[in-house]
Length: 132
Length: 119
Image 1 (cartoon, chains in turn blue, brown):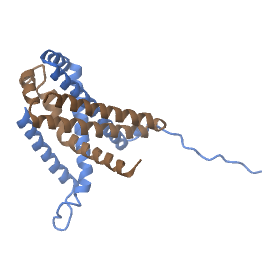
Image 2 (cartoon, one colour; image 1 turned 120 degrees about the horizontal axis):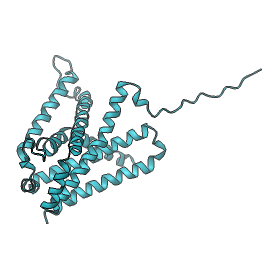
Image 3 (tube, one colour; image 1 turned 90 degrees about the vertical axis):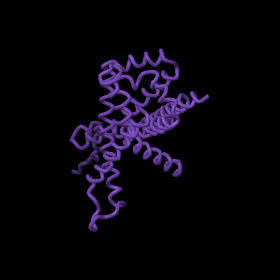
């Protein structure tokens, strides 16, 4: 007697990103895109209030002074820094083959991440000096 | 999708990643945390008068246009790709349309508010 076997169809698990730490970090990195975009959209609204006059801008600033908005800003900064560090790690893998070799060896990726972080601090200070 | 358009979109995505990595952290810290309106450190740099002076600087206008538009492109494009990996692939077309709509509105709004003060 022969049996018919159905082909095995793996069920989709949409929560695969919760199954281990690396997948979770990857998911947080991707979600950082949404959080950064939300912050930018709020900033665009701030600019619109600034161009509308002092009373509109002051009303926005009162909203921005709320604990909820401050918490959102802190969360947005955390996600942005996650994006920054993972971006530097990613670009480090490309940069290590493009920078001059030392004793015939490419520099380690973490060294390139540190260099990029130093450039970040310099760029941040320049922005503060120029605009704030 | 046309290969040239796809390549342009990837170029914009990559530029956005670079800009967001180097310029967005300082913007968030300076605009929303360090000089918090509650005056924890000093709210003077974000007073209306100082904000207007800063906003009228042509270099600051360019900085805002580049920062906002490229961050929107990168961030939303990245999140869109993630949505497709967590079960929303059947809704690819409406999600893609919505993402590009938000990017377009955000970029157009930035250009409008930043450049309208010139006229």
